[in-house]
Image (cartoon, rainbow, N blue to C red; front, side):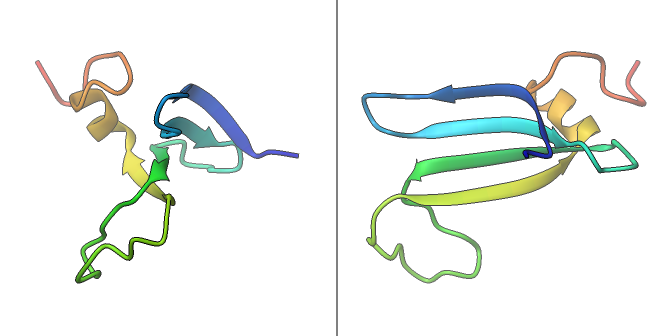
Length: 81
């Protein structure tokens, strides 16, 4: 059973890349949105070089206010005029 509540997702069949924007059902604060990306190599702050070992996957927990400011979800960012 999944604990993810999907807000948006898409898969690019040509490249195999995909993203999933979701909330965790058991996140009591409900102030965070999760962005998961996959199907392509990526580099993190702690890596020196891309591994070249094929597609990777990364998920980040983003404050909801940031997702609104970035235009990932609709609505006015909190604290904006």
